[in-house]
Image (cartoon, rainbow over all chains, first blue to last red; front, side):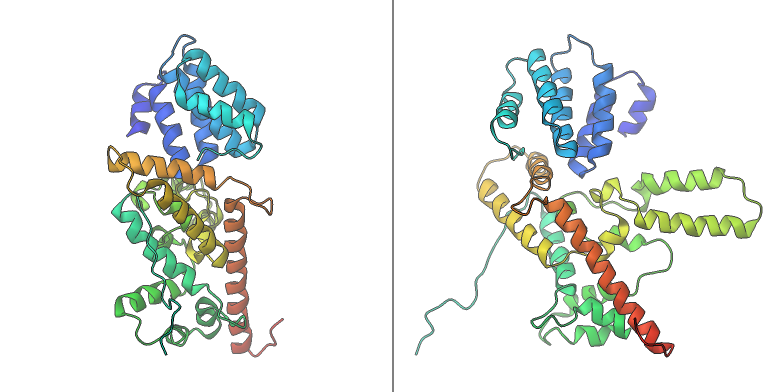
Length: 105
Length: 244
C-alpha cells in the first residue's frame, strides 16, 4: 500500500519513512537505510515531527548495519536539534556515547 | 526412595502474538531435524538425504510422538525441488523471522521484479528463454531476501541448528523477562517493540566477536553443506563410485 502511496505522492517524506521503518522491522537493514536516506533528503529543515523520527531511525540503522557510530551520533543529534524534547533520541544518544557495545534493547 | 531432583523442567515464553507463539513450534521442529544426537550421529535431515528414506530418518524419534508432529517432520524432510524453493514461504525462518507476519508468493516483490525483468528480455528461442528462467529460479534461491530478514531461501529451507536453538532460547528468555505482565496498548505495539529488540539483539556482538545474525547464517550454511555431502554420498553409492 505504501508503494502505491509513493507513486501517488512522489515528493512526500511520510511513505518513505514508513517503508524504511517496516524494512527495519523485517530485518532488511540495507532497504531501511535506502528509504531513510530518501526521506532525509526530502525532509524540510524546520520539520520537527517526522523529520526528527527520520534522523533518529536512520542513525540507528546506520549503526546496526555499518557500525558507523559517528554517523549515527550525528543523525541522532540532528533528531534532537529538531525536537529537543525527544526521550527516545536522548536515550539513544546516551547509549551510543556511553557504551562501546550499546544496542537498542 | 524418592528422587529429589526435578526430572522435567517446564518452561514457558511470552510471545507478542498468538501466531508467533505457534510459529515457534515449527521453528523448534526445524531445529530438531538438524540436531545431531550424542556421539555426533547424523541428524534426521542427514539420514533422510543420505538414505532417501524419510521413515528411516523418522525412526530416530520415539514412537509416542504425535501424528501431527510426524506429518510436519515428513514435510520438513521431503527432498527439495529442483526449481525455486517456494516451500521456504511455509518455513519458520528461525528466530530472525519468528515475529514477522506470514507472507507468500503474492507479496514477494523480489521475485515479481526478477520475473518482470526476465519477461522483458529478448531471447533467441524458447530453449534460451527456459534456461534463463531456470537460472533465475536458482538466483532467487541463493539471494538474501529482504522479507526473510536477509536470509536466502536456501538458508530458510534448511532450518536452524543447535547454535541458533541456543540463541533463540536466550532471546525468548530475555523477551519474557522484559515483557511478561507488562501492559501494552495493543498487540501491534507489543509486536513492534519485540521486533525492535530483535533487530538490535541480532546485531549485538557476543563474546566471540560474532553477532547472532552472523552465527545463524554461518550455521545454516554449514547445515546446507552437510546435507549436500549426505546427498552426494547417496548418489555416489547408487552410481557405484567411492564417495570423496
